[in-house]
Image (cartoon, rainbow, N blue to C red; front, side, top):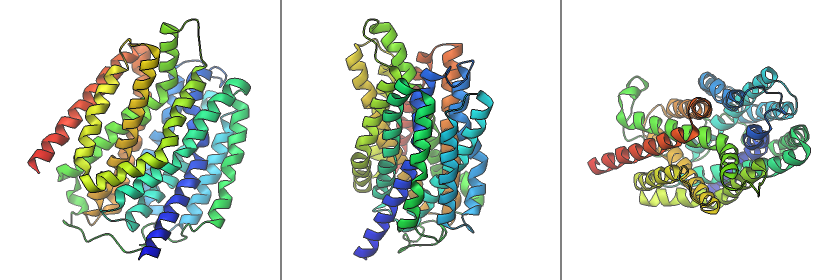
Length: 404
């Protein structure tokens, strides 16, 4: 049993490593495009939001399709396809033109759907309530090392050599993930095939027809949607823009390249994720998901509100790191909550597919809506609204905890 647990953990690590190599280009784009958009051949700022969100929108209808494909397609074939598509999309980021880049971002959306659903199904099959948070934390922590390299190195290389150079370099690195597929312990069976001792029997055999009547599932999906909308969608896609605005207001004589600084800040988060994400996952396994979730939501609400305050630049950067810490906690815990809810039903694959759909939709809506509001009104309005949403979510989960 101990050997099986070690093998399962090793496979989670390898899945995460492959994913890390595939997300280099996407992560780079989030810190580079908001400040290098003219170099990419864009003519309007709203096009930045469109390019950073189209991959999420395309994943919404793709999730159920890829879910069905994985019932017949082996893990190995699905991952190889994802790697090839990821490398092609990453290389294309060095070519100018909105419509071409829009197509390539859609192709990246296809690649990410294969990567993410494969990982979700695999972890759900090999985990139980007492270790699901830990496995989710391991996966989220390790694959985000790709974001660390993509944002840190990508921002610096783009500021010095331009987008074309960093795009071609990252595409080559992504292709190297093919070697990991062949030399890893990654299973060739489909993800819905149990790879270890199955999770405990369902506590209530909820059928698919009754899914939308279950308040626990509804609130899990809504929480996943809103958290990804505010973090992966809005915050990640506007961090370099926020830094640009703050430096213009407070540091007119000492300017740091915003893409580079945003890359450094994001990279620090991805650097702590391999340790903190599993740690918070284990704590939620022991303390309970809801208490950890409520505390993180309350802290996030305060920090999002503080983004708009006129504090000194150094303190403002500390606030940004606080937001990043809550992102680590919320991403891990909400993923684990989704796994908990799904494991208690007879349609766990369908529940996780629905969760993947709403989180993809949330991140897409976040990237588009924040740039639309920033262009039409003011970006501060968006962040005040984000603080309110997080506060209301915390109150809702606290009320549910008291009833339980």
